[in-house]
Image (cartoon, rainbow, N blue to C red; front, side, top):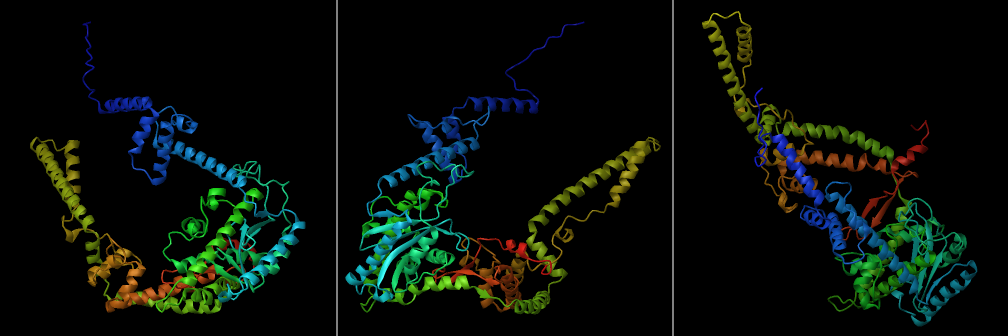
Length: 610
């Protein structure tokens, strides 16, 4: 047997592309495995990242370049033994940011507890309530003596800033856990806790520590005794209260759930700020205080609720911590309200007289209590009347849709032209594919004919090859492929649908020739059939009257007649939250209650009702 000499040229790439690809992948994996965390972060920083991802990647970069104290989460980036991925770095960065946020919150909490002012009073013993009420009365007496006419425009004799802490922000479900008030002439604030809970050791509350957590052994007031003590004052309309509630009117709702009503609520610093400057970036109490605090003596850091507690209820947090925060809230609220009052009083109109305060006093100061009354009362709905309207409007809508078909002569020819317009690119693709299909068919036919002629010339017509060629030729000639042109292209749309935006756009812009003015409503957009654009067209274009009729009946049915019954609450009424500043034009707006799914009410239905 002859010797076989095998030579391997290692410098030449393998001819097998699959093997070459595997070799390249292995080289990439080897290189990635040798990549340092800093190199990986640099590589990932060049990728397309969301703002959240970029912040996380940057946190890892900063941690890696820090000389000392690198967080362990920044050191361990690989999820396995392979390369460092974007997901690895983002996850590590989010851990770093979360750790930093926890550390910052702990420092804020420690600072807040350490710097509690002497005039911040947190009452924990029921026996101290009469002393607090006497201080409240003394504040009112002093204001009537020292500020006899200060609040005359608002129709009250005195004013304090008030606030409730609660289990959440749902005005119908959540309950209050504490009450705070600022007494301006006495220059002191009070917090009355009565609903804090010990959540240590409960799943989901691991963030609580000994400094920030409420403990069951911590003393607090009795809810019923607090409500009995404060409700006479809060219900008194002659003595004014300011809140920072805005459209939620949360505190007034809270009082109703606690069994009494707040009257004399004549100042809402959120609504007042809207009147002073409707273009504020934020109307939250803390952002406004941070922005304008220098004008009324509030300097230094102003921490938001999230800064202190995160996106959680204050109920499981320390009474001391929440109390200091709550008293600062009413202090800020008082300072802001007082400043707003003076700004309105001094604002001059063209005739030199200040009218802004008159406007607020006569109208806006009455709205908080009015809005809450309307929201709690709700509206009785005539369901039988709505059923009659549905029965009346449904056939009218169907007729209006049929009128669209007849008015615009929408038939087979219309649908064909619409299809050719809307699917021009699809038709072009079909024509090109059909040309190739016809060419392949012709080529195959010639091939089969050649086989047949060759076999016949050789006298081999009994061969299977010959018989197969004859059969295949007959099949190909029977196909009768359509010509490759627009006329013979298939229809991609076979009927007109009034609910299809593309179909409507063809009808409006192509068939009727309506000038496209979408850009006036939606920058950078064209050929819109959105409701706001169409409403403008309906007012100006007589040719669109049939479509306008359909839109009118659809809005009546889908927005009101069929939707209102689905929004009823357990009492059979519609309840909505009113917003006096809910629109750019200053008109009222409202939004339905969305805190509890309406489906929950079905569990109370009986078999008879079903």
